[in-house]
Structure formats: structure tokens, C-alpha cells
Picture (cartoon, one colour):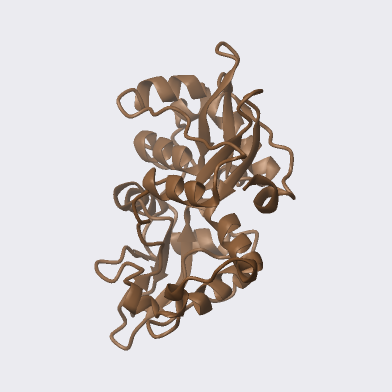
Length: 284
């Protein structure tokens, strides 16, 4: 499985378990990555992943008021955060080996509700690559012609029941960043459609946008609005990717790969919005 999917990988820069939290997240920003493996020098092994979700949880848990220093972010080490906050929910590192099947990788991502899956060399314990949904979708898109094509690719997303069609989480452009963090934590979604007073979608605020709070050094003021945060983006994104209930899964996958997004929106005349997300995998 490994070489066809991960042949063009970059060298991974692990984060030391003993790093200060702020230093660790600035390292993610500096390297342009959304996650990094955590290395424990005491155990001489990888013990987990540091992701944007950790940053969101830290801000959500410890933010007090505008311009008040978040001591826990500035002074605590990663190991302190893990010991204090994750003491009841800490899980061992989930990974696969280069010899595991592609299906095993997909199943592991969905079963464990994770977005990044390390590929670990079993003898040395080195992490060779981090698989993501986007990487797997791109591989299937590029090499799908070399493998049998499942019939369900020709079914519509409505027929397959792929997506969230009720109670879609949204955030108003006038809401604060802290309100958006609350929704991320409570609803466990990857991105939020941003709506104006008329209920029209004017953009998306994603988990990845949150890491820019560290880059812009404005994480001590989470009372700024989502609309203002979108205007401060270093990368301007045009429009919101849409798909429609009558379109086939194959068509939607093609669009996702070409546009390099993972959560298109499905509009309807009643102004309701739907997320498109992967359906649960069949049992092994």
C-alpha cells in the first residue's frame, strides 16, 4: 500500500513532548503543516500526534477575556497539557504499517474518527508518512482506472445517504471566534459555513483557520468576529464549493480532488445547508 499512495512524501519534523505548547504550534505554522508526530525522549518513541484540535481545545478551555494572557498556552509544556487535560481520554498512538492494505487505512481513519494516520516502519519505529482523507481520495481519483470500479460510484449522494442533512452547524459572521471554537468542540466538525444576517453563506471557517491565530499572534483576543478573521486570511478563498443531491459520488469526488477541499456544501431552495462527509465503512 505504502509506495503508491505516499511516494512523494516530505521529511516529517517530529515535535518534542517537552516543547512549550506555544513553541510547538508556532512550529506547525512555520512548517505549513496541520499536525506533527510527538516524540517522547524518555520513552524513545512516538507517543501521539499534535494537531490543530489540541490548539482549539486549549484555547477553548483556557481563554478568559480579550488581551488577557493565556498562561497555560504560554508556559505549559505539551506533556503537561496531555497529563492534565487528557488524563481520562488519552489514547495510544494509532498507526498502520507500510504493508497494510488501503482498506485498512480507510477503515482505521473512520473507525477511530481521526483525520491523520501515521505510517510507521515496524522495525525502526520511524514514522514514514501521515495519511489523510485528502491523500487517499487523490490516490483513488488518479489510479481508480487500474482497479475495479465499485457500482456505488454511479449512485447519487442522496441515494447513498452520504452527508449531514439535518441540524447543520453554522456560525454567523458577527459571532466571535470563541463562539466558533465552542461549536468545533461541541459538534466535532471540520469547518463551519459562515452565514450573514440573511442566512446566506458567505464563506467557510475551518479548523485550519484557527492555527492562523498563532501565526498572527491574536489568540489572546478571541472576541473578534468570524467575519474579521476571514478578512485577515493570508490566503483569499473565492466562493464556496457546492455539490448537489442528484450528482453521482464519482462526480463529487472528482470535484473535491480538483478543488482540494474535503467538505463541499449542498444548497437547496429553502436555504438549508448540508455537509458532505464520508459514510461509515462496512465491517471488516
